[in-house]
Length: 212
Image 1 (cartoon, helix red, strand yellow):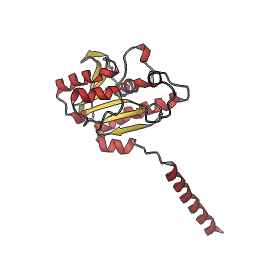
Image 2: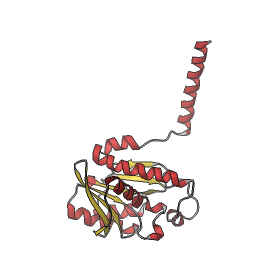
Image 3: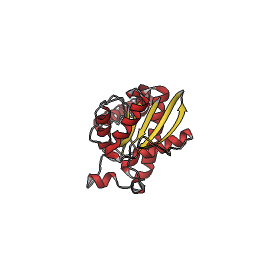
Image 4: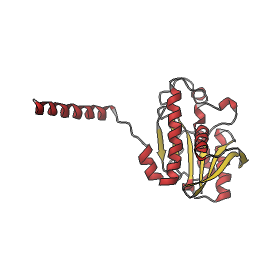
């Protein structure tokens, strides 16, 4: 069995905000699997189905972000699921809009929802999918994360949410390592890009000289 938890805040006020990337991704997964996430259980909205030979539960904690771990702890204690079969999806302010990062395990970083999960279950050895909401944020952090999207951001965020949904299913279907290889696209640093361009230019020059 796999538990996929998307982090966010309940209520219309937060529905389409940066801090609700987890909720929005769960909605996309539910659509892909043809189920509804509307049953109230474990202080959450949940939906269940089978995928790739596994029972899968989709979870949207209703405890508000900072207490997300309460819901996750109740689910994990009830089903006795191995911690590596817990997948958590959440927003990350340190990743650019439109980008994803999948990690097999690790610390909670600065995300309060993740911090509470790690504290409540006393373990951080579970996969997580971080959806970028803007490494170049401006102004007050709280207002930023609970704010809406700009017109320019919307298509990028929609694309990253879809990729996050696909990545979560890939973890179940293919394993965490293959999912990481498929979806963790590392951006080249400026120096690497310059070296790459230099190599291309060098090759171009060689090709020209050969045809002269």
